[in-house]
Image (cartoon, rainbow, N blue to C red; front, top):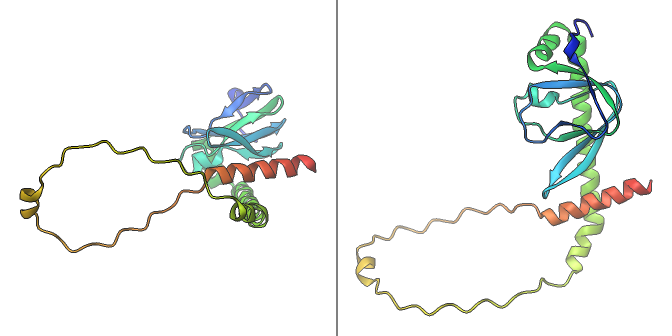
Length: 196
């Protein structure tokens, strides 16, 4: 890459954290040697989701989209990287359509990979987890604690002065995904990957 300065080449020993999920990024890196592991936080745990090999870009989404880092990246072995700040990356993209096209291809490839992985995970869930969940015994219910006795309050005077408006329909409540199911799916994916 033309115009490299002395501080642009970065070496990190194995186990070093290159970037943390959620922090703001001010640069991207081109991995020149070694391998990096990408981890996402799920239920407070860092779960490995991919490995980055040499001549791949990492951290570009945070600086191109001006948003926090989407994952934690750790050196799996000693690595060598070229650091590219936001201004420089945008300058390179403007000046070199070939590099811009390569970055677009990298990002598009990642979107396709994520989409494929989601489809596979959904298929596994539908085939294995969903039927097991339907056959599972109902959840154990605990007895409710008895209510404390309270003195009755006379609200009649206050209620007479309140005007009653027509009843509105309640808004539907969006359910959060069951994090336990997600954790089980990730665990199944790991076992399948390890058995290959």
